[in-house]
Length: 58
Image (cartoon, rainbow, N blue to C red; front, side, top):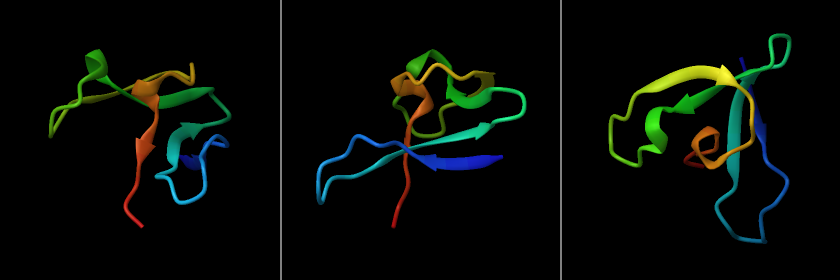
């Protein structure tokens, strides 16, 4: 599993990250694009959509 910083963030902004396995082209994905606490995750093909981007605490 690899966590990668997405390139499109402004200075001082929270930066989205993706969690992926490059060899298989799969990413962690939030089911049904939920924003609720304790939302379920699934492994899917990487698409770069918002449900595959996570904001990690610094």
